[in-house]
Amino acid sequence: MQRRSFLQSLGATTSGAALSQPARPSAAITASSPPAIGEPRVFFYDDGRHASPLYQFAPPLTPENYVFAVDQLVGTGVDTLFHSAGLEGGVVQYDSQVAQKWGDNVDVWSHEIFYRASRNLQRLIADGHDPMKLLCDRCHEKGFWYLPTAPVCVIGGHRDTDAGYGRKSDFVFDNPQFYVGDDDSDPRSALLGRFFRSSRMNFLIPEVRHERFVIFEELLTRYETDGIELDLSIDNEFGPFCRLKEADQMAPLLTRWIADLRAVARKAEEIQQRRKRIYIRIPASPQLAWKMVGFDVPTWVEDGLVDGLVCLSPYKKETPTDRIVLLDQDPDVSSAVELTRGTRCRTLAALTTYLGRTPHKHATAPMIWAAAANAWDRGVDGIGIADGMWAPNGWPWTSDEYETLRLLGHSDLLATADKVYRAHSGDSGPDVPKGLFPVPGTMLPRSLPEGASLEVPLRIADDLDYWLQQEQVAAIHLRLRLGNFDTDLNEAQVELNGQRLPSTILQKLDRHFRVIPNGIAGPYGYLLDYLLPPELYPKRRDNLVAVKLVKRDPRLKPDVVVYDVECAIHYHTHRHFERTAIDS
Image (cartoon, rainbow, N blue to C red):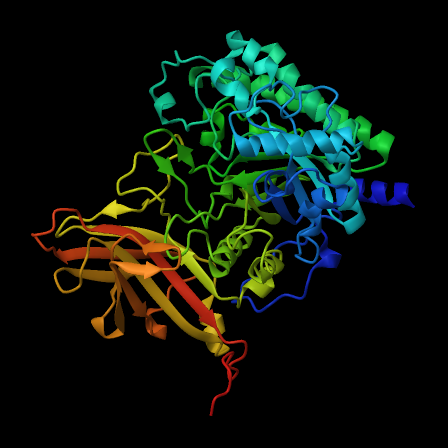
């Protein structure tokens, strides 16, 4: 029976017409294409450290403690766990026979929490418990697919300054001749994030490719995993694994390397009688961006080398001088969806949810549901959260996290879930420098001079015409957050899709110095909240918000800044049914 199920999963196609759900009216958000039989649809990525027993529980750990990473997913609708098997410096988080474990090469520690993580890891292994097998077995016991993940590119450093953190292996310390180096003449190299520094290992070097290969080979063959995820980012930053000018040389080498892993996976499938998938984390970008960093994604798909593209927003950049981390509710999955359509390869949207604002540092459930609705509307085959540490209300999770996850895999249920759609906005100050992957359209925050206008695109998956006919639209708000702005001293005009929003639908909300739990709300300024009438509702998909600074207070030196533009959509459960308690 096990072999029959295995062969059925290998022979499954993505057409699945017999499995299609009844269609909604054409005006509604339609359900996405049915998933291939036995393939991931809703995933969760866990870096295995932050919201994890390794950091948060005191040693020693029991196996029951460690598999909490799996147990917390039960009942969420998640079907696949991507769990980190290794760190950015080459060490791993399991009992590997081919790589050093976290802390194997440390005598004196420089970081207490990293020390704790290593103690927990090493003690589990000393007690006879391989963390990789614990997670693998628990996932299968609870009905999840388990795909360990690790970076394909790792970074080196100096033993005298970095060894005490335990995160880097002797291989990266002892081989500086394998580093990319700092002589990249391409001016775009200055745009690389903090992890893509000159000490990253150069994938053009055979020894570097081999060091990474044997780790993924081990994860495919030594353990009963359901495959692997090849993470082409380093901590969710993307860049080339060589000098930028050498990316064309690296591309065929990376493709051959993946092809060799595919051969390993096929052999492991026959031996273990278990599907061995290869998913690969790539930037959610146009094909030209993939080519720029040496990722020949079309060949990987056309030659059947990968089973899924995990598309992650590339707009994270961290350097000593600037930082951009943002909630991207509409990652550019178009190229991946078009490329994989009609193939056995699948496209998954990977959401990151850090917001960098107060009162919410992390995306709320309606913000995540809006991102999910956009992704399904774009035609993805699956979706997931890829923060590494997703714990917006602390860890372990609260009921809010469970309710958020429950809807992610159901585009039809998301159709009438409350949502908050946000324009691209980072957590830095205005006019931040661009990274290697520039944000399309307008990236907020942006300064707004007096007399100038700013146009901000906003994509919305909801078909409001249909739900308005059903009398289920409760309220729609368009909100703009303006910094260094006081409505008594400044004046702004706002348009939505070319229509001026009148002051009669505007509520002015003071966001200057407001004391909130655990801090002060910022940035200082005003929130312009427009309650839209039906004739001014946004369109399905592409919308354009324009704001013009008509009058500026000359006595305040800092510029007026447009920080956030968002559209909040609230639904009735039914046309005459209110969620609030009856009080009269």
